[in-house]
Length: 226
Image: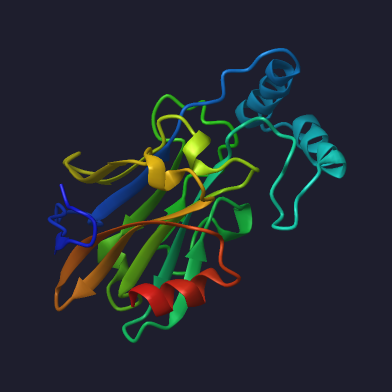
């Protein structure tokens, strides 16, 4: 595995679409009392897709309380969102994929999100972004993966938060990172890794930086990493 700041060639299986997956997982909050009721209904909303459930979920948003950074302050769940920012050869920002329905896939169909998890109850990855490197050539040169807490919970409170990057065909892992530790205590966001094209080969660089949410993620990532 890579140490922070190190890079290596991404030895992806060169068949089909040369697909890799970036996966984020974490343990749910162990609920008690009214928190248990809240988490029960959160799980129901995730499991079902009926019109009634969507109505209830949207109706409930009217009563949510946010801080000045748009984070929900009452929800006891850990809601970690996974993002991927894509750039061109010269570092110009081109596309973003995130858990929202309107940003779940880019226009080229080169990378796409599995959908939002608001609780961490999945048995495997809670959120994933699939990246098709064969399709990406000619459109993108850089991908940077970011996770951000959508609730008023810093990463230091989140149990067993992990990030991995894996070859979809072979199952081999390029990165598998545990996000615990003192550095995670005071931050709401984490910049995982940078996948980039160097010549004809894709490379992966482990960034591993905790930070606070910048005003403009695309600009922040460009200035710091590209």
